[in-house]
Image 1 (cartoon, helix red, strand yellow):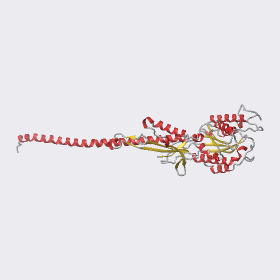
Image 2 (cartoon, one colour; image 1 turned 90 degrees about the vertical axis):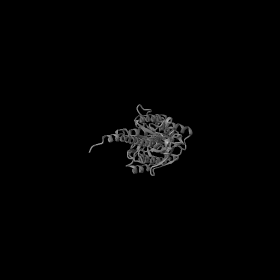
Image 3 (spheres, one colour; image 1 turned 180 degrees about the vertical axis):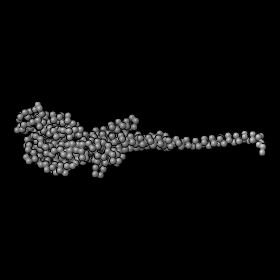
Image 4 (tube, rainbow, N blue to C red; image 1 turned 60 degrees about the horizontal axis):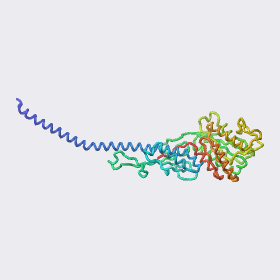
Amino acid sequence: MSLNIDRIRGAMPRLARRDRRSRLGNRGSMGVMCAVMIPVLIGFGSLALNQGYYSYRAQLLRQTVQSAALAAANKLSTYYSTGSSSTVISTAQTFGGYNMPSSQYGTVIPSANVVLGTWNSSTNTFSSGGSTPNAVQVTGVNTAANGNPVSFYFGNMFGTPSVDISATTVASYATGYTGSGGQGVGAMGRSFNTIVINDLSDSFSGEISDQIAADLAILNCVKGQTGSTSNFGITFINGHASIYQPLEQAGTNNTVLQLKINLITPCTILEDSYCGTGSNVASGIASAISQFSGSTYTGQSKNIIIITDGAPNVNSSQTYTAADGNSSPPICTAHNCTDADLETMAQNQAALANAAGISISTIYYTGDDTNSTDQANFRTFLAGLVTGTGVALVAPSAAQIDSSYNGVCSTIPSSVKTSS
């Protein structure tokens, strides 16, 4: 069979034209598809970008609020020493600004969003207000109402140019974390070794029950807030110091410590051989420094809490030695010491405590029979003994000796209790 070459040659241009038309048709289809898909892909990309940015901003705000709450709670003691929450609030705002400067993010933590209150460790709840706060709640906001919402890239494409976010953290003194996630933020497991100096002088005998309540509250604070890492002890002062309860682990020995505290009475010779020998704060500080010496407490938190109703009171029949704070060279000799000498001795011992890394807090009960001039002088004297992270507190009534413990406990490094 022979091929008709002419017919084949005539058909080839028609096939070529059909192929060209097919290719042009395919190109047209691809063009339509691209016209449809490109905006869709851009939309998905924008959504992914917005979601990523939202997650970043939410995390940034959460971390900012956590650091602000921790810093604010670490200043809670200033509320007890000044009666004002201004330092707590300003600290939260300052730390908020470190992480999210107002020039870029607006005022993330308004002053009204820093709230003092009480953290209940039994129910893991926060209650605002109260006269003896132990926690700070900080809420950070990026909202339209606050003038600083989170703006989205290409947000107008989806009718959502911005979104509101907020974060809230409660921080309190303590080293454990009880919020969601099971992971603490703050000074985890840090010790708060504490020696309470109880004034057993005659002038304070009527307030022993209130001093016992304060001792128990401080023990509970040390045991309950710092877990099994802290030791607790009690030292009595009259003209001299005597160790009533040597430093013991507060958690393991809690029941025994409570029983021993409840056995404290107005000074008797069986309890303290120095009854009726005046009042010498220096001796208590010197004794505590000695108890904290040695490698056991190296690098750990060491704290002295002095509970007293006034300044030192000399007893002319007493001789004050180096163990009483009359360091070498002695401030005074034999029976020639004065009240002013005992004050100087206390100030010198406080300086030695500070050099040894020991924090001193004072709780001053103003007393029912102390005139206003002496109250002012005694308050100034005791405040001058404060060292480290300690705080100077004043109890105008005997009942407030107990409640003052919150101010002391607020010097424990803070941790996050809950964050959302």
